[in-house]
Length: 261
Image (cartoon, rainbow, N blue to C red; front, top):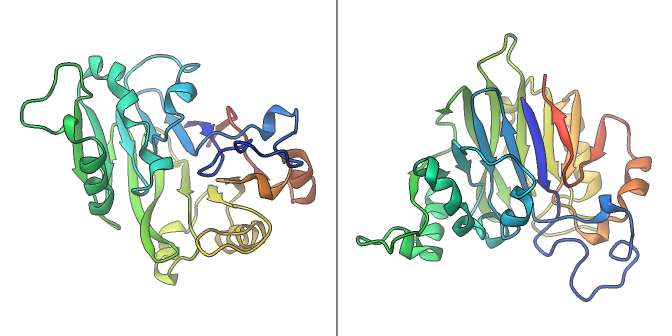
């Protein structure tokens, strides 16, 4: 599987509007972080996780071909505010979007014209699928297990994904906006090769993991490689943070491509 980090930033992005802090004034392109999203591709299947307000900018450099499914983690604007921009991909057929009941409701409220009985010509053709934790689904050659994590008091979805094209299966887990996770969910993460997880900043936050909490979680899971995402300007500059971390736990950057084997 090939995974492209389309965005690795938090809800405000980096640089943050009007900010002149040490991180926001960096000239290093690794410190330019759009809102969080990843593109996962195999030889036959292409899946997007989250579709935030930067989607148009993020997808423009990518080859224009069918998106087989969009997985939504939760009903916050920075994770689904770009859904209207999927309309060019509707020439390949309806866009299948998978989300939990709260996120489905949020999409219906945000894009009512996409689900109207008499839709205006040209609006995105979205087929909305309600999914639930621990109920696996298959999109093309990818098998997906939704798991539950807590975004403060809001239950949201993370995803464990592997491709059936290769033996042994390559697998990774994608978790964003997590503060805590129930012990029972950890069983679904056993044996994950690659972990992608949120690390907001250095100081404590009520609804997101800190850098130290993300490192502790990575050690708990024991993945071969962990990539940190959903990072704000308060975490610091990319190069300096990574220099302080072990080589198997690193901040990802926008546009980075990794192979999951």
